[in-house]
Image 1 (cartoon, rainbow, N blue to C red):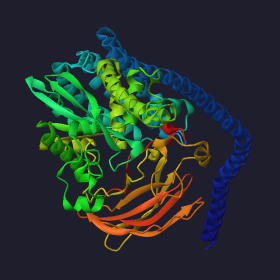
Image 2: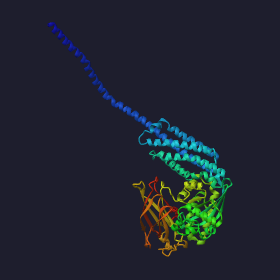
Image 3: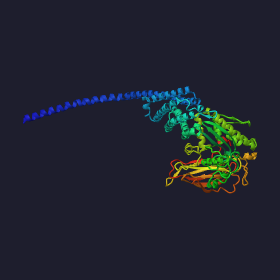
Image 4: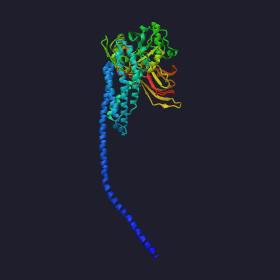
Length: 628
């Protein structure tokens, strides 16, 4: 028992000693950790500070390097843009050596930009907040420059004359072989420009100032070039045939429309000329008065009964009025028939232009001098011919002046077109087609389809997927005061109907911009309205037509007069009719000097419409050209 207790006690003491010995190191360890922890607490702010300093230093160096790179890239991008401009100049001048040199330089610069953007510096930059999108944009921009340079500029430089109008045309002679080269070149470069323009156009607005300074001009330039090429691209394959390739002879009737006597497609046709093209050689038969060419009133020009009832008898009987329909396809067909009956000549097509188009072309080729002591150029042609001369001379002298300007301007264009910048020429043609100032109808159905696709046909749209509504005018004022007529359209946001169609609220604002003070000074005879029911000598009377889109409709809500001095007799009364299956409204609209009529309506599209509603109007004199 005693041994047992002793053993137990001994064991107890031994046990507690062991426990004490085990705990001792732990106590020491805790003390040590406390001392260590205090030292660490004292050191970590310095460690963090050091890390921050290093990071800031690295960030500063990175930011500085990136800033320097941005500046360098901006210079290179601007250099590439200037090289593109030099390339176009060399192409216009036909300078083969300069063309190849600028193409090579542009390609080298584009690749330098692309290589720099492939560096780790720029690879990291795309993840930086706020500027990451700009980095991605500049990478796209570099790819575009390489694509344009390598796949467009360099191949074209191998055929130095392909893009030059100087090798294509000179002294009223078109080089058919050069024309075919041009067609091949345009067909090659068009898809490159199109995809490049699309890529750049999708890029967001740049935040980095240096990038924005390069991106925005390039976005605009590529967009303009793409639009110019796209406008005429459907005609590329047909150009040699249109211009008498392989010994063919093509004769085109040219109508000079007078917007001061407004008709639905532009204006009264007072003068007619002919372009005769044989294997590229162009002969211009001088413009002559319409009745001298086609005779006075004739039995019929082939107008339909619907057209006669809607637009009245002159559309069929008088040679100056066959364009009272807004469908130039029908106008071309009627003038073709009238020419066959009057001259026994079967023309290949009918071309219509107006003085605004002549002004656009004179801006490209330079001014003309007239025997009347007046210089006509790209800033004054339309206003001088259609209006100012009426204040200077008698009506007969004005007619002689118009005839001379038409002939001289056309000869000038044919003689000097070879010196014109190709892109500017294509852009001008595209603008003229969109405004309805240059329209073409040809007998060949296949070519006519291409003319329509290119936008030069001036037809009424029957495409339900691309809705177009129109407002058109035929002047009944027996004067040239429609020079002061303007028409603007405001299209509201659409509402979608249950059947999928869309309804737009549209306001047409039609104004007579003649200042009433001009009446007090005394108007020339050609500017005075000669109607018994006129409120003044400037009270325009316009047959006005509203035509609904294919598969759609128009609901006229109101017609309001603004700034009237005397109420018009027989207030605006709309009559509902149809033309070519399209819902049509017609009224006789009076608009006095300084007066405006606002027509409010709802236009509903077809349920098949895929594009927004567009408005087409009779081509009038633009405000910036008329100088009202």
